[in-house]
Length: 431
Ligand code: SF4
Ligand code: SF4
Image (cartoon, rainbow, N blue to C red):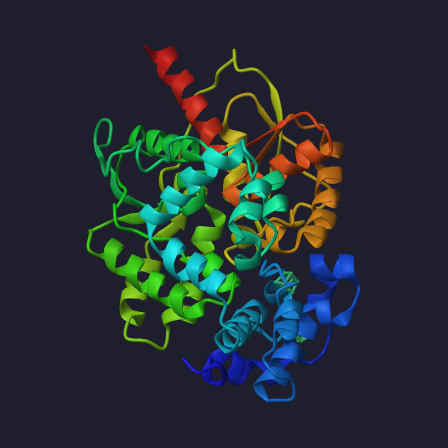
């Protein structure tokens, strides 16, 4: 679709009253302190781009790409402007005008094929020991790909030998009486970087009466594509996923990744597919998609019996921006944690402060990302918690890096991994 005709670009910009509310919550503006790095500046920039006052150059793209797409600004804008959508639409427009072989290769070819992506990630795991820096030097990848591979090397957690998809069945029957038929949306990061989260998800859901199906042909949720100016590819991926999941008669579709659930949410699917022939399929899909913690609390009402032997453990919870800001899923992960025997939940001073990860942002904007991360790690340190829980693999990777950078003890978990342990203890006790 033509950039100027995207509804948010066409209709929303003039609603900006320049109040600056968005600026006051933006984590990037808090670090960089200049207007063109603030959401209000982005709105103005997109307006100038739309009206032809500025040209769609790489320089303009770089200014817009400073945004994490965390949606904090959108959540507080009194005029209801989808600032992150404006930004994503503008990046896509600029990308069209400035094609890049490396980006096309990464986002249109590799990241649209789960098999190719998995192969490349396995390869990456293989060369991780040798060092990505060497790989980059020998292959010239640094010239082709966005971001900085040597920095990526530092941030990446150890890549496991086997991804989740190769370890879980397509159909996982419910244990005991079946309550729901659930489609599991397995995101790329969970699949390839944190397969244990996927294994825990399957175990907890099946042991709580769900038949869990992991469709073999699902693809990436499209969020990396949106962030990197590949809106058309994100549309294709969304349409594909809706079609695949709608072919099953699921009661619910769940994902353990906050970024995936935001990309697959009704708002985002409407942004991508609202004006296309795939809009009805997107509506059917969006009515069933749910974050895993929301499903566990609101639908399953999962319970863990009291366990006097449970070791008391202090846990703090980090809100993934994509889950908290627009989807408003903040209480359910906390409630899940509080129900786990032994867990004492300790809140950070600012419960909704970004970690600076945001998918590929920590690789493409390392310096800014690290400034934001430093603040986050200080907040975590002050809680005295030994475990950090969060519902997004991208945040897990960033926070793990924060622990290493700040020489802090502690471990980062997805709440589902703690729920699985509590469930196993429950099973052992009742045996
Ligand atoms: S909060 Fe909304 S209306 Fe206010 S300056 Fe930001 S974009 Fe404009
Ligand atoms: S989406 Fe987040 S980082 Fe981007 S402008 Fe809005 S508040 Fe700032």
